[in-house]
Amino acid sequence: MWLSEQMMRRRAEPDPATLGTVSIGGEDGAVVTDGEKRAAKVISPGGYCWQPDAADEVLVVKGNELYVPGMLQRCPRALAPGEVLIYAGSSEILITRAGVEITGKLQVAGDVYIEGELYVNGMKMEVP
Image 1 (spheres, rainbow, N blue to C red):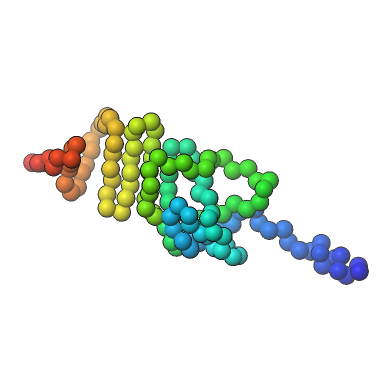
Image 2: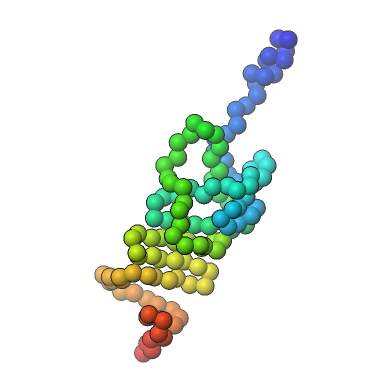
């Protein structure tokens, strides 16, 4: 009896946060730590959306009494794994594997360098 009580006391508490590896990317993804957790929720700062891709290393928060500043993502558009959306009101910056899309009023306070082709309102711009 005494020995079994001592063994129970020695059991380590599980870490409230650990690193995990995404096994299934996208909105209904899964992450592996000591086992696989399906339908893992993604938490991020307000105005920022990200869909993890398979093999990404992520922070996994476990437990019910841990408080994490952030908000449950409610992304205004569907994202492919690995894409990032930064948004506020009707302005958006979408970063994809193919490039960057900017929607909304663009105010520039300095130099802007663009490599590749430039499209404005769907029309290709000729750059000298």
